[in-house]
Image 1 (cartoon, rainbow, N blue to C red):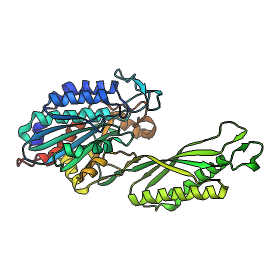
Image 2: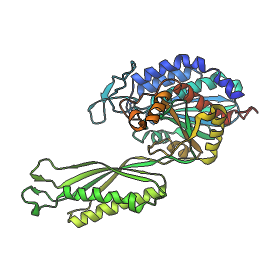
Image 3: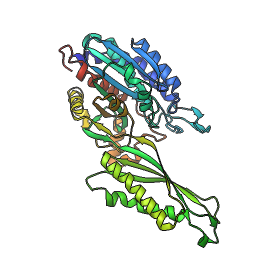
Length: 422
């Protein structure tokens, strides 16, 4: 089989890939600051014979590997890290601190596993390059910045990505998750939620704390809004749909005996369809405006949407094709993935290019540890999750599986061009 021919090179890839991963993990960079990472990626891609274009929409880059007539498959990895202080105890832990957009010093960690994604895609690119007699077509290895802030994908699109690519047939991506290493999860349809953060400012009338009759108290107003928002999911979203509204922050006042003139609430909204998203956002605005009116607020509230992530909705036919290829190669290690409440901006790229896509999950937790936690009923507490300070995917078999998954999925298109089987 042509795919197996490519994967015979995994031992050669492993010889450099594991060290490359450790180096990335020890040197994380925040969203939009991925200069060192992008430089190392470009160097590796050129070493493996890919045509590299850098600085797309900031620090984004692509490596293109042309191998005759055939489909073009885009494989994507994200590169950015998070402002988290690492607490894994690994000998390649991050000790990096940097300056954020506000000029504050912050610790940095690859707490979401993007270093895994980068290492796996580089490994897959090397395997495609080393075994060109086994496939036909074009591989595009795309390395995206600023996924965590939801601007990296659109920045690359706005930076002229489409003009730098041959016509793309399909886009593929994966994400490491707190599941047993060696396992892969696929899913048709909505797989990651759409996410919106909203900042709401409500206005009162300030006063001395001893004279509440002269005030419109924004703290009381904010409290009523928080309570009423809880009814959106329970009373306005159908039981067959899924939505989440979280009030993550409420800020008002500066002193115990001062009634402030405003309060700021920050919300996070997760939905799995455009219709539910629109309904939830409309309900939030309706409730907030009504509570402000009921409290006698002197002015209309302000609403600001930010950090908006699109819905990740896998194409059925593309997902079925990848799932079948995975089942042939990985067997029982492939499962159906439940919808994830996390969010991601990958889909902005294939949507802009007008091509189908699928996105799958990659396990990264030691299998024995996971099974032990499952038996004890402590998966929720004993298994580190993405964005936690102790999240650290095991190097193997995570890298082998993630690298092979990209190859197997890509070959579901590229391996057919020469009459071979994927």
